[in-house]
Length: 188
Image (cartoon, rainbow, N blue to C red):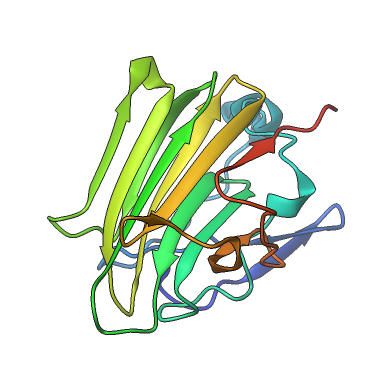
């Protein structure tokens, strides 16, 4: 689960850098005590439905901070898939997204939402609709996709399809060629 409280710490294991989870909760979270791997499910089994997403969406966008460039930010990491909005303006911007998949949206975790914001799953779990009212902060949703080989995103702002230059994918903030667009799982 990704939530922001401050600067994360890096851990290097088997040549992979992993960052501590972020939290927007008002109380600090303490990592669980180290336990034997025999009592924990294997990471591969726990994350099997999340593996192998396209390289272009891997990693939290480096350009994302509260008040960054107005738009949608979408990525995958060890904690699942994440879709957030931000804007540098103190004026409210209205964002709507419709995500569809043959897979099932699950483990929905709303992030920093106000009463006017909304996240709904419909169509037997195959459709995720989010509505955010964002100003100079970050609103978002974290989720997993069980099954399915792709997710289709249609991202709007102010009631109109947002320009791809205001959509930021993965660590390097790659822009899709068009909107709506589809992100596929990779084989392997």
